[in-house]
Length: 231
Image (tube, rainbow, N blue to C red; front, side, top):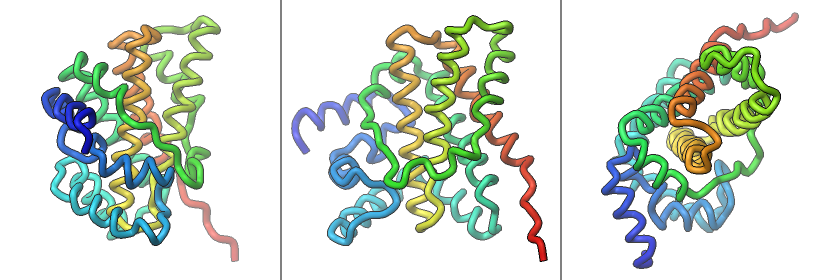
């Protein structure tokens, strides 16, 4: 690891953030994921690197929580909307927790996270109720009737959240589901951190956005009923 990368890693650890220990802030993740620009499907030549990365993450508390949730999803045979909703709520809860506990550390360090795109795009973003997220956020923050500029901004933010909420991976192993959740967490934290730093959103409204978007998505998806097969 370069001296610069090591300094950055030590700064994140010192910040006390929820990401302080796991490999989102280490060269291993950048080399294995960012270099390949992939998530969910990896070429054979990096299989050993991915295995090593997952082994490193195994001792991380946040990763372990995501992994256990993924196992429960499989054991119960939960449908995709339920899985997406529950993970979206958990990711948003973690981001909000960090914002609440250490706003300065959050803004400083989340902006340095690498941004990951999903190999096959956001597979489940069509499930995410973007307009309902926007409406609920405006109601929650008392911005009704809203200014057109505010509507455009919240819609843009909802699109970012929807893209990431829809990027969870359930087609491979529970470990990769957990890894995808870590990356969604990092992407959303990075977005919110940059928006606060650029004074596009206040700290209070940032927290409300994270909470409302997560709760709205989960509540909406939990209420979806599977379509009955026609015989």
